[in-house]
Length: 222
Image 1 (cartoon, helix red, strand yellow):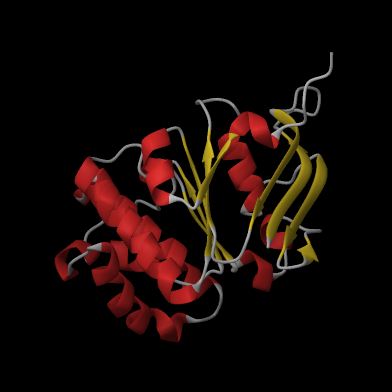
Image 2 (cartoon, one colour):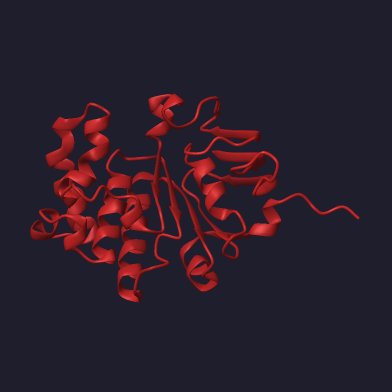
């Protein structure tokens, strides 16, 4: 289970982005988190991905309460979560070929020897050809780069996948291809999914259930 219980988070202690948010995702479940831009969805996604320390509340992954964040979290917990962000060019090293971008987590965790086999599995799954894998980010489209970012998120075989507005900048055909790749991975592995977005139609078609952002927050008093 991925659980966020009464989480308060932000970038300034005096003015948190949100207060007391709670959300759960069961193993194998796909949950859509729906809300307008600027409401705090992406910050919550970063907390769930162990990339941002909350100011209060509790995050639990597979029964383990999280005590450390980013590189202070145990490797087994860090690698259990794969994340895809909205803007691929902000999350991709422009110096790396797409093949190296996808394999980057393997090298960072001492599993360089697995890179060739994982690339062979993931490239066709996300729709990347050999010539695209040899290119750098400035030589491919946003959609092609996002395909590589999805492959990178899957390369360590995470048990949990967080897609934060993954398709917001993409056309309909690329959106459909990436959603299909995520669903194929989930069908194979039983991974849980948190899909964050503001496209109500997409999330309702994609996910087992959709949660409105305001329903994650405690009721207002008065």
